[in-house]
Image 1 (cartoon, rainbow, N blue to C red):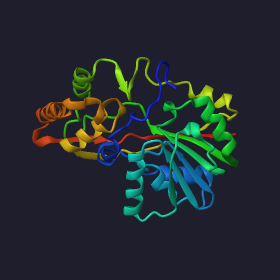
Image 2: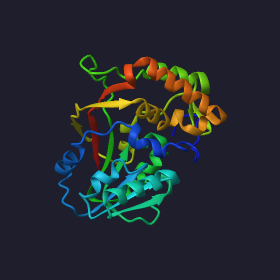
Image 3: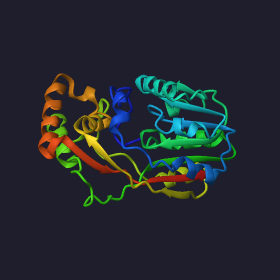
Image 4: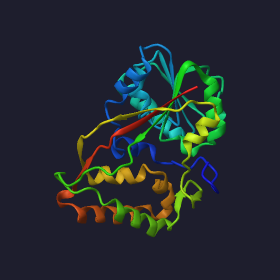
Length: 275
């Protein structure tokens, strides 16, 4: 886990309702990319570790006989169940658990997915456990947004002023990034290739799924983005949340005529690790 930080249940407290409007989507082709790379055919089981509100679990569920999403945040799982019911997806079960609780009697899986979640975990322990839960030919898959800057010069509206938003968050919460009840003085860890190699996984197959779509975003959408992030989760502001949100909305309205922004959806990166 991050050096000098200890996980606690408040990490994403209050963030779940803001994910759908606030988080930019993954590139829509990620399901097809995984289907082709792993020859998914509607059989086998998916395990989504740190599933949040089912952002990746639900699109992938149709490629498996059964999907299981685990997350330690009760509100995230409540939101995931709501979205599954709304979308008519019935082959998913949701388990409140940390990755460190695995295998938790859940059985074996064809694919174990970590969508921007692995860095919050005791990674050596979790990687070793997951390797033992994969069926022969199964894969440990990491999914994230590509980190390179995306072009903005051709967008029809301004990009949300994320640097100024970060300064505003810092004014309220301090200069060191908050994470639950603790702080991340050294950020989240990298070196995941070393961790997975130690667990016995071979060098990964890397896939990049292009997105390119441009989304129009309202002030409400950008506020949702802020509250969906661990370092600006709603509970961190305490009694000052109302004042913070007023300042945030004021900043956003000053930054764009009519309160409309635009963002280009980043490409999605997938790393497929096999034992």
